[in-house]
Image (cartoon, rainbow, N blue to C red):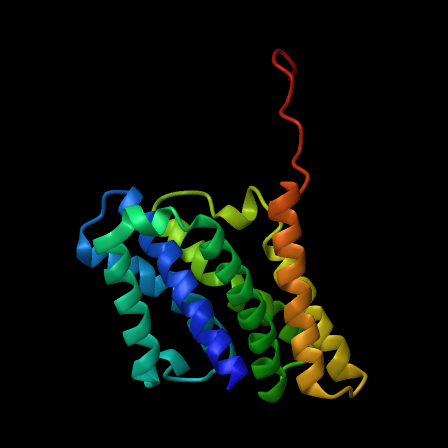
Length: 206
């Protein structure tokens, strides 16, 4: 029940972040809902497609769609108030990232994927929705240009993969891995860490 509650908390956070991005881009109410759904469910849908699970889990269970759509509508109606809850939204987003990355890895392992493939699929589960959101807004995905986000998701996925390879109990390993993702994400936001980027070429050089 705790994992289910955390999963829905992550869905709400991801849907809210997508809806807020849509509001800032001046999309209409339908666009806000679509972007909220895409951000929250996109990673899971990509995961299921890669694993051959059709139709994707989130499209077979109406509560997923209902919760995300309702969140997007609330953000549309009360976006000034939601925007002021930035820290709470970021913390919930970190929780969602941890849950989705570790759960995605576990699902992939249960479907027979190798540890290597499962870790990559788990990372994609966590970051896929946000990347699709940015592409729909014609932006370079955030995970490719700033913040420690994909690295945090991959760390959690690798923890689950290593635990599976060592035949450790799945439950405790998943909790520890999700906590590692949240910790890395929160500390990176607090310390304003970003992945290194290449220096721009000097002007006048060929």
